[in-house]
Image (cartoon, rainbow, N blue to C red; front, side, top):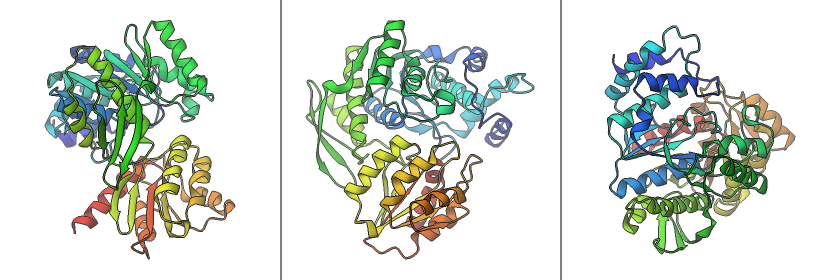
Length: 428
């Protein structure tokens, strides 16, 4: 089986349907001789920030000399980019080999696994085959019944809890936090970030139920000291950590993610991992995580950001008001998935821009721009509808002056399609 055949074999699997429960992924892993038992994991859940935390931690641990698996979602550059070892994507040959191993469980199954469950099994099998020292694994959705909740964690992390995926996770913060805190395991520390009182109560209750130590990241004091369009530097007030660090993830909302990473490093040191301050500094400074307030051009300023739910939109709005030029110089290219709270996201962002271009990605979950146009009209925001990302980008860029700013956001599916178009233009 080659890579094209492997991709074709996965096309019939449920990719939009979420099927809670661990039975299907456990069947896959049993068939693969339980690769998840071959290495410890750091398991990261949360509404926002979990991908950034995974990226920073994986980079630091690689610089510390460990062989590190990294599993994230969704893919942003290539279908294979969510499965990495030491920053290297799984090869096409390795991917095809792993899919071929589980092919007998995909054909004619009464309860077929989802695409995400298969990719989770492929990732864990790949990490075992590459003999990783540990893996940093991002939850796909929720936590308690997510396919990734089969890993053997040495540390778990809960970044944030906000109102997202309410149809699946519940319509209150308490219910969503219960789902996400379900990654807690007996005797495994759970590090929590900036949670609301309701979410923290739910996390503490779950930790008490399973006898997991709960650790707050707020013992680490961070202060952003310098900023440019390439790096943000922070002063760190905490014992045994570098006095200053810099990260290429420049948005101020990354401060909380950085705090979680540093708290995790302190706990991993307590668990016996050798992580020098030099590894922390170099790993953080070289973190690669596209599409998170990523500056693609300076004159005019063009920024990509994957804000895809109301909490992320609120955090992004603060960056716009702080870092972008005045209102009359701001433009927005926006598209979102239909199952998101698009009215609240749009109401948060649209008024900050003098001109809004509405579009949709190729995803079958994408919302038609006409629905966004209704919101823009109600908000009295000038707007244009386009039918594709390539048309939307062309329309949004038309007439931009060097001192203008264009933000492209709403969904990572939009970012995924726009990013190569901008890179192609830079290289041409």
